[in-house]
Amino acid sequence: MRALLPVVALFSVVGCGADPDPAVVPSGDSGTPPVDGSATGDGAVAGTDSGVAGPGTGISAKYPGDQGIEGDPDVIFHSDFESDFAGWTSHSQDKTLLDVDTNAQLASGGAKYMRASISRTRLAQTPYIGVNAQFDFPKRVPTTYWRFYARFVANSAPPHHWIRFAAGTPSFQSDGLANTRPAGDQGFWYDLDAHDDGNLSFYVYWYKMRSGRCNDGSATPGCAGDQGATYYYGNNFTPAAQTPFPRDQWFCIEMMTKANSVGQSDGELGLWVNDKLVGEYKPGTPHGRWLRDNFFSWGPYYQDQGGFEGFDFRSNADVLGRRITLDTYFEKGSLDVRVANGLVVPETQTILYDDVVVATARIGCKVPK
Picture 1 (tube, helix red, strand yellow):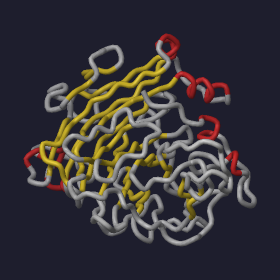
Picture 2 (cartoon, rainbow, N blue to C red; picture 1 turned 180 degrees about the vertical axis):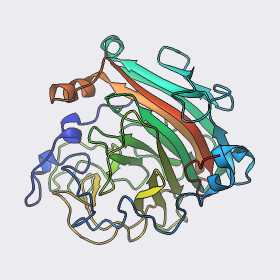
Picture 3 (cartoon, helix red, strand yellow; picture 1 turned 90 degrees about the horizontal axis):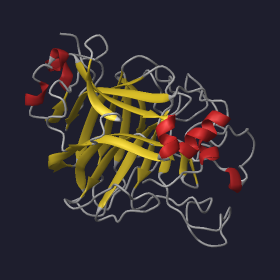
Picture 4 (cartoon, rainbow, N blue to C red; picture 1 turned 45 degrees about the horizontal axis):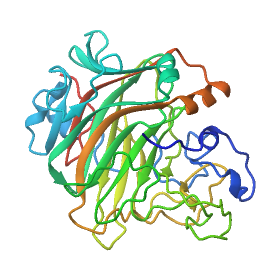
């Protein structure tokens, strides 16, 4: 079970002005990002690409409709759920919560897709519910690209936490490590989270992550903004200038994770939505500021204090990409707060997943057959 995050901070909108009261610094960027990327200092603007690989130029360009993509030498895993959960290492067994459904009119491609459905009635009985499908890599790798399609049915609420990537030694397990800073010689991990405003963000755990206790990210008693207790929840990175993800439509998400060279801060994270670069975090990009456990590249807390330093994810070269998890995790408490604050949601929150590919090179979204 993951620990409850400060829900009000996650979903509140804080006004502009000078440095915020340390007691109310949110757990992610707040306010509404400018759609053109202006006044943000963020070099990753939705609708642009950095020249890496754009539409039709990744691995998928060689395999229209993803047909045969699993045979590409750079591909680690492919699942379109046409063979149900074949190939997945594990998956939740309660079919009322997670299952492969058949509906050719609804699937992203083919006739099948994975469905996660969690009702408010079920949450009233069990206030923490997480269901998932996991895949453990047969060979761990330093750089991973992961693409999948998602569809939020109607106005289903985003989960408390969403999908996860983990890197580590062969024995490292990232599950169940909320509020725990992992050892650098063991592993690192992150969630990609979806938010009510349609933004996506990285929620990252690694051995040099910052504590939310102090304004400078340290955990020194008596520090500026001292919260009185030390905690290490995931550090938040919300790319600027995002176009909200759509509802009742499939959209394509791709993430890149590059482990650092040991002793250097050259690790990277990248995010594309529908083949458009939404955000990248690497040495020098984006510009912004650290404040407690958040890196702000836009919004009322944004200041240009220089480019992001890059990630020092690991202190051991044996820490390598090893697992993906299509996770759907809801908490009754956080959902109730959001509803009380005006979020309109159905009885059952339903998210669909399809066309998963994991590779060591840029994948790109599917191209037509």
